[in-house]
Length: 544
Image (cartoon, rainbow, N blue to C red; front, side, top):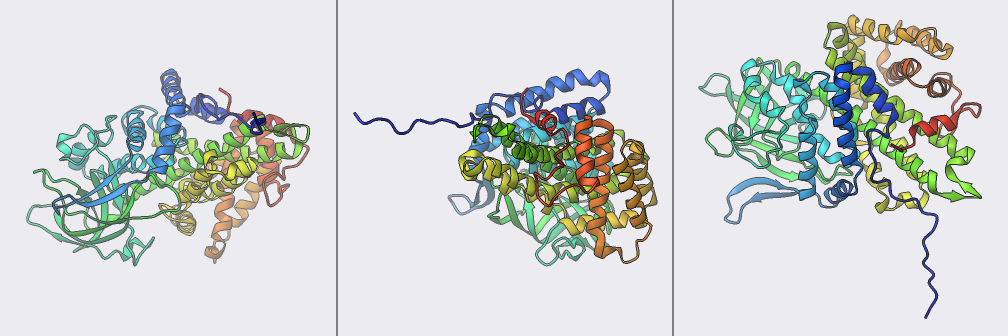
């Protein structure tokens, strides 16, 4: 009998059967910081339950299967009738159903709802990010609909339901609904005011007939959509139901599904309207203003989604390095690998801390916090989402060749990583939005400076960064060409202020030394050697 040559050694076990929430110290501390004490026990139990599900072998397999079996478009039934349906793998429905039941569309209806939902979103989308899109848009539709109290009264209970009611039926017959959004058209892209979809008023007040197309419409299996179209008085927001009250299907022709780089379990489509029935949301000519609250909420979810991807990337890299041996010891104990892992962990914690601070501002709802969000959301969306891909790449490299293999899960994280930087306005759109806030809304800058000023005097590098930022803000002439640099500094100073106030000293010290103090190279793993990097890595290790 031939000797065996296939003994497997020196391989890390899968990161499975753990509590994704409890293992994330930065996330746990953010929840404890931003929730009132009476809510904490319930929130921790709820999030740990979701975390254990996310870390289970079964649910992780759902994520793999949903990604490997992307949705399929079925335009017609067997008899030739137009149906425009999208079929998903059962695992995708299981993931989406669990997200809905966990309250990831219900933030608006309970105390501390945005912080609780944000933490749950970070936890759950680590399994598979594709189900995050319909969860995000359904959640974000609520503030837009509230511009019309009658529409909000009708639709909000369905949108915030914790029941996932699959299938296309009249909304009045469903225990819960999902919403999508359609703004982008071929000729306009981010310039939504160039939209050409037309809206013709019908006899019934507030109802219209739409004709046109949408170049990107995600989650086309949803029950309703908020879309922009040109009404007689200008660009206007409309609610388009998939199924009308009498049970007939609205005209919603799905032309094709996009073949995307990542996010493959989620359906993104091109759709055509041709005599499509719609209900106006808000006044004619105020479509952008009406839908902007939905856009702001989905932009925050882009920050949360990137924080989620970064956390999972870092957790996998540290877990692998804890078990993998090379050159006479475990990787995690090697000074150079420790530097890389600590650097990645800093980026992840800074993203998580900032994202949860933004969610807490939504829960607060005061005028000052709304002003803060006006500047902080686009700045965070710009910076955090742009940091996601470099983190995913470096984390994958920590696994070496193993990380380049699909079975590791790292390629899926990498393909997903650019998405949040592109959706809901790419980098230049966010940078210009920050400039608009600075130039037109002085209250936004005042609220931001008040926030970062809470850490003034605690770290000389942060103080220097605040001073330099104020110098840049004092001269906004010709600022567009340097907008990205300015917004980067806005985001980094805010992250630094939060970490100085809330993170352990070794984390704040390392962040300020590298991101604000200039003692940092051009790649991860170039932190000053004098820092307490072992403590930074240990804090990020996924052990619950």
